[in-house]
Image (tube, rainbow, N blue to C red; front, top):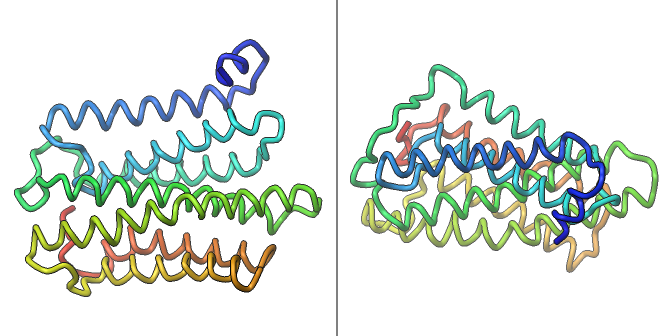
Length: 243
């Protein structure tokens, strides 16, 4: 009903752009999944497409939910994050052929591991956008709204990321390699990322920390998130090197 209400009013072009982008990216994932006979999240290119799709969807839903209370700069930064991800996906160095996954990747535990991880990380990306906005805006009311956005985004993304990266990831590792945990570089950095966001929630609940400190911790957490995804892939060798 909220979407129908918006359609009756004049809305910014960016609203339709986010909706169209999310739909197109999800359609790409669905079509590739149909062609390869498994959900298309088994290499870096496919993962980036899915990651960007979820970010675009979250930004769209934020526009729908917040209405006139939307903080446009947050949407803008989030959109830039998705654009950068898609620019990386367009690199000729990333394989884009539609190929059936190798046996180790043909597991629904992997599908749960990857999809939940990226959904959680998409909320972290949203929190990152709100954190940058918080650090640059001076209006106290807007700061409070940004602070709530950071907290809400991490509060939702944290359990999803925990389930995907740590729980489902450990189960898939046992299925694929015979060990729940191997201290593989990606496992280790995913744990570091989880610890940073655990620290954010701890300081929020126990230390009652708000404002600048929370925003900085959110930014640090997202930097670790991106390093876990890209940095580990290209700077370190491990069990997660699948292309």
